[in-house]
Length: 409
Length: 170
Image (cartoon, rainbow over all chains, first blue to last red; front, top):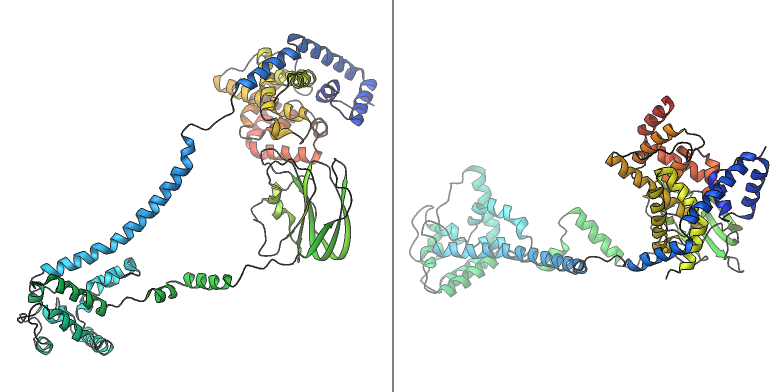
């Protein structure tokens, strides 16, 4: 009984598009089946009828004219600006962000000065509030600064403590803690009071420190106190004093220290990683299996074979990449085999191969995970180069290839 | 640079087969001729992507099938089912009425599929070819055909079952 032959095969037979073996099969089928012969005759008649409708030369002329008239697709006239403008926009956004961050601290500083310069006698000039404008972590410190304003004004040497009444009377343990902090701060910064006196005393006669301290809380400010300071004629001296006070009262950490102090554990890890990475480039592991092309003429035609010499201890899989249109996946990845020692394998090239890739690992691996490597752009260079890829970390390729996307055998 | 002689030779060899392919699907001679020209146009415009991968017939056939299904989709959207030229272009397995249903449904079912899978699906479900015949005609392995048909079935899902049910009722 003759083989059933599809119309498409008969069409290809008439178009002389079959290999010798396929042609023989078709001829056998036609010879053994009158029905197939009748279909072939009908198709032949249809072909002649179709070609009679428009000659191939006329069709070709029309098509070539159309191809020549169609200009290559171009992007819009303005679209070439898209990339540069996007880059400029990103840079601008980054600059704006930095500017906002910088300005974020400046008004705080300015408002603090304005507040201290215009405050009345019952309010303390917050000459120590510019701690918000500290160069490091300004935004991070805002909450803490605002929540501890009262504590800040309790510090010894602060004009706020000396001049202003307590916003609310501290009682009990809170007061004790404040007192303890005050003592500790006093011990820590012995120069501060002297410096404050020096700065505040430049314009008007300042009240002696002892007198100010001995004044009861909530009492009127003695002459030469903060009120005088705020109304001082020598504004420059006041600002200088305020600035020096700020620096004394809240010394900002040195930039180097700030950089060294990781804010989070991740920072610490990153810092650690950087230091480790900084020691040198990551080392590439030695391939578990080395592959070399056995000398000989490289294959140039379909059906040729390539001999590979494998050497090593581990597991390997051999893949062949083929040409592809539109970056479609096209490739074949064989099974994983163990290797201990040397071995010569033959790889048959049954397509327009681009390259051979030998994947190797010290342990058995799932080759389907590495199907993504078959994704490549169209190339015109025929085979052959042999490349090795060690799958053990850190060279593992992306594992996003789904199992069903494995190239066909 | 496209040479008219090359185009003419290709047209002489494959034009009739492509015309039959298009006519089988769209069932209108004018449309089929127009689609053949469009097929060659697309082939020559993008031939750089096709060179060396497989025989030109496979790509031409795929383009022709894709364009025909697209045409069917537009017709379906416009509510025009086209003329049914009974008895002349019917497939071996499906009668003309069932074939009409199959084409109509297939146009909707294959939306979003790649051209190769759609071509294989048409050859299998419309032309009634076996997987071996499709593999032989397109120069692909039978396993690839099976996998593409599985992908097609997964893509269409329940809609394919409904189509088969309607076809069996008819």
